[in-house]
Length: 281
Image (cartoon, rainbow, N blue to C red; front, top):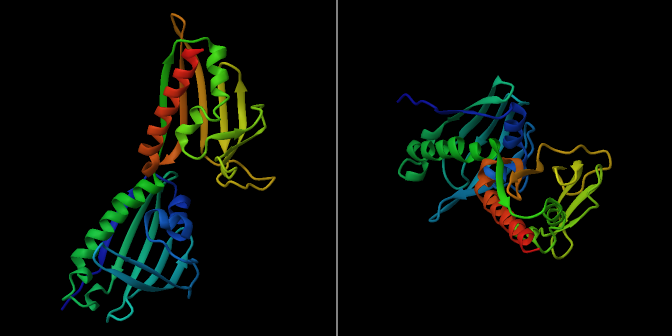
């Protein structure tokens, strides 16, 4: 009987380096794929993980077979205790500087027990389509949150509230409600929770009082002295709206699409708190 490999393709609005990192760095893999105790994109590396549904979980046993950085990653895929052996291959193609096509090929699926519906090609097709078209897309593709609020208050009052988020509008972001900084350009900005644990670390890029503030964030909470900030930044702009009103605009991002809804809700709450505090003074 002739068998054909399962092939799924998708193009992402993300550079090839970012997609490759998502495929090969275990801390990123757990965000969209499976949680692995260990993973290295090195030929011969063996790894395991558990996956399935609410009814049954299967142990997956894999070995990295081939690696061509930014191009190809291939590993075996088997289930201890069940017959069968398959090979999974991820191929990346740079369509443009910020667009990457991924081709997934899963060979050998017919070797698994076909009396088990979870091992049939239909099940794998559904699973890989979800992972490539939805889960990985939401992780590697990004958006920037843009929101604003109209406030009936003096600009100096609004700016003072903005610069004092602790136990005020900072509570909109959960445990990260305190900030350590003097807001001078080049100064560190360290967000902590109520226990003093660091949640985010950045630096003041630009500060023009009552006009514009930009904080660029590091990708890690413990950056080295010579570390560069990442892509994520927070920008605050105050403009005159007329009739003693001012509009406070924020931009936050870029963020993975999977986090946009949650963070949009938090920023909406934060802006409403700033508005309420400013207008009560």
